[in-house]
Length: 159
Image 1: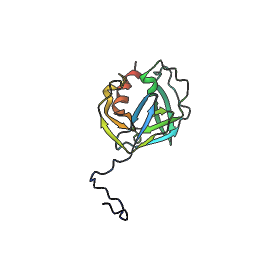
Image 2: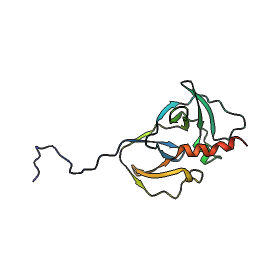
Image 3: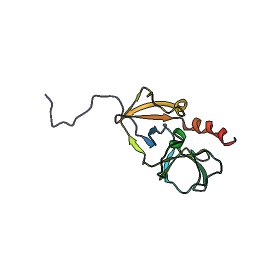
């Protein structure tokens, strides 16, 4: 018999999962890697580079630092007819390594998640850079090695 006067005490010894954040970019849900500094800022008018790839959003000035901003939706699908200009730039890492990813959504706080099998429908451009997949709220979120991805794109600027 349970004594209802006593507060419930869990017998589980597992610590709750720390809150992690994810952001939706196009049709892809990205899980921000542990230990990665992130900040959501309004997307200002970026300074585009003539002849730059369509997925390069340009540079923005953030607190005196020049930040490169990338449109992952266009990287994954260059023929995307997404006419909505992204409202936000999710800045990842600290200066001078900061990069921005364009998004239209606020990051989601995720506190119930578990690692799952890699989905088979990951965009080919992202596949080599996906480190893990997580199930949260019945949706799959991909943990992306953004540093390796964006480093791999640098040679496309010297063409």
